[in-house]
Image 1 (cartoon, one colour):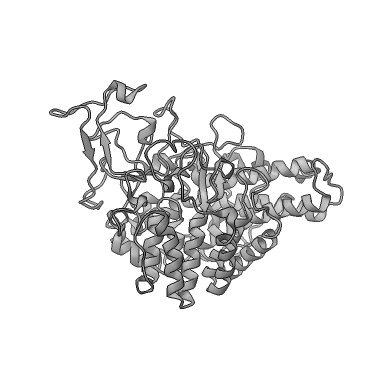
Image 2 (cartoon, rainbow, N blue to C red):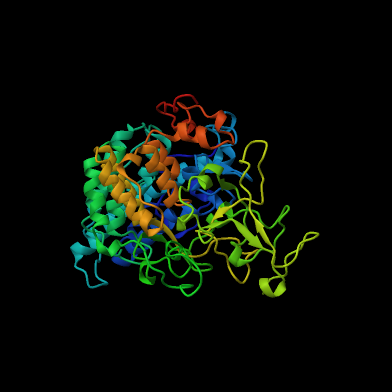
Length: 553
């Protein structure tokens, strides 16, 4: 039986790829960590490894078609399984039969998050307990370097426990590394409120230390730490604290919303809202002042990510079926359409002039092109009676349902429609730097806090800042309720936010998914399915104490 023990993971994962050898019964010796973390360069390598682990969220789980971020997006009011694969899009077709403790994707995500926890703990332990570390190597003092390493490691631990608490609720809270080789089989689940309080502690420690611009490209910014404090306080039902921390971001001119065209393709047709999602524009040093955290993906570069497949999962299969169009880079590359926007998500836009619903933001049509138009790729295959130059409008008039799915002609968000221009078919991964978090999300957290505090006028004003940027009409205080805020989040953060978490935080996941997602949502158990089942392998490996399963499984 595979040993799936939380404490099995050690520092070696920071410089090696994820593979089954991480599950060996004999974890690497503590001497490895002692040698690696004896100086600043080794600790920086460890921090780089933590960021590499966190980026797995947008990669294929174990180089498979299971996108880790599926657990945060699929099976909600916004995303329905279309060509369902091996991720949560597959579960959302039938929650009753497939949302099970033995589902290997859940095991993979659970273990991935505890890899981050243990690797963070290893760094924290070495920095806090060792007196022989050589801190030389840059212009910072020993104390400054020590604090920054600790802050980055504690942010990573908070990242992992944030995910774990949303997905599984009560989970083992571990603040010690397992590099001593001791395999524990007596884990207990910690109440979710206590886990979240630890997330707050880690973020509060890091906030004054993490720099405004991040210590390196791709590392988290102070604004992102403040954003996550704002979010976790909403989860803890402290909207006044949310307002405090969201204002730190919203009122900082360094994190300004993008309101003007900039960067690559600025001289081409488009809208300012979409410029920040284009390869070459996503990073802060490239002009993206709205970005709070950008995941770095570079092809064939050590540490550049292994299998980022956001585009492949969320781009429709225009390459097959009735469309049968040539795969090109500007069309979004090789799409599989595993998890497609629901009809509701497309119909949700309340203003046809909203830039977020424009052709630049959502692919709603294709044009048949000859070889010159597709160059350097082949011409499209023309169906009988069609001509090059004809436009094909994608049709979402009939919803994705159990009886109507696997649709090639379905609209999709263009936030990730980038592909390798040299080989958009063979190189299917989205190897470009992708926004992971931006200030617009913080504005919406602020509006939610203002609503919870009873100030609907302030909430409307905050939301109107985003709507004005996208040329949508202004709203009033009378429009504001929690459902409107969730609708606005869907318009602004399509294919970005962890939608499941947002709906769970607001107590709306089951209600809105059953209302707006017509594929598999009738199989949801509103009490059971708000949490995922603890992987059965974890329960079976906890030999000395019973680890209770989540209710209903």
